[in-house]
Length: 318
Image (cartoon, rainbow, N blue to C red; front, side):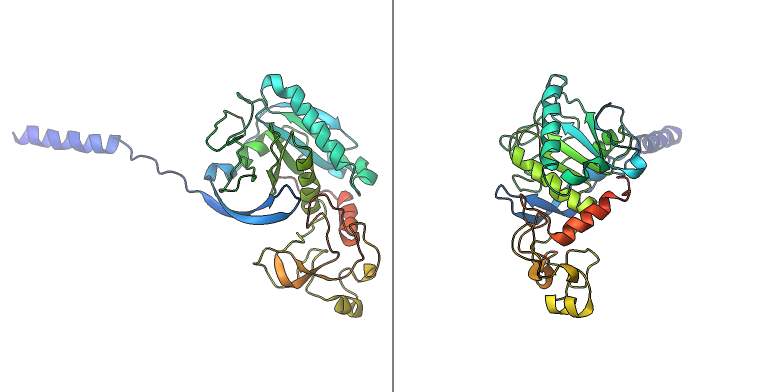
C-alpha cells in the first residue's frame, strides 16, 4: 500500500510537471497615431494594438521586388519601398497600378518633383490568400491577408493599421528601406502615419498621406497641427518654435530669414500659434501647410528641410 501510494504520488507529480501552463496572451501596446480625415485634417488618437503589430524584426521574408525607379546607389538615395496587403496573385496588376498612382501623386508635389533623382522606388509583391482587408466595408469582415491590415484600428473607422513587423520583413527584400509604405487593396479612404505609413491603394486622396509622412522621415519636420497635449520646450524641428516672429528676428533664430516672404501654401511666413500638438505657446511658419493639412504645400522652412534631407542618407527602417 505504501509503495502503491508513493507510486501514485510520483505519477501525479510527473503529470503535473509534464503539462505546461497555458501560455499567457501577449500584452498589447498603447501608442498615439496620426489619423487622416477625408477633408484633409490630421489628428492623433491613442490606440491600443496587438503586441504582434510591433514585435522585434528578426528576419526578412523573401518576395519578388520590382524596381520602379532607380536613380543611383542606395547609399546616396532615399529608398521608398511599397508593400501591398490584400492583393492576391491575380490582383498584382491592380497593385502595380496603385503603386504607380501613388508615385505619380507624390512627384506632382514640390520639392519631390524637382528632386526626383534623389529617390529609388521599389515595389515588393506581397501575395495574400484573399483580396481586401479586415473591417472593410464593415466591422467584423475578416480577410486572410499577408500583412494583417485592418480598418477601425483602435476604434477609429478610417485608421488603417498593419502588422508593422511583417511589413518591414517583406520590405527588407528591397535593396534598402528608408521609408516603408503599405498600400491596402481597398478604395475606402484611410491610412496612418508611423515607421510603416499606410494608405488605401485604390483611393487617390490617400496618396497625400505619403507626402505628409515623408515630411517627417525625409525632412525631420514636426506636425504643425494642435492636439491639446504637448511638450512646451523649444523643439529641434525646423518648423516649430516657442519664439514669436519678433523674437526670431531679434535673435536670428529658426525661420527668421523667411519672415514676411510669400509662402506657397498661402499667405506669408510668420509665427502662427498652434503647432507640434500645442494649442498655444508654440508657433508654425505659415497658416496651413501639408504638415498641418493634407493637400497643401510645404512652407519655405519645410521646403528647405526637405531638400536638405534629400541630400543625406537617412537611417534604414528596422
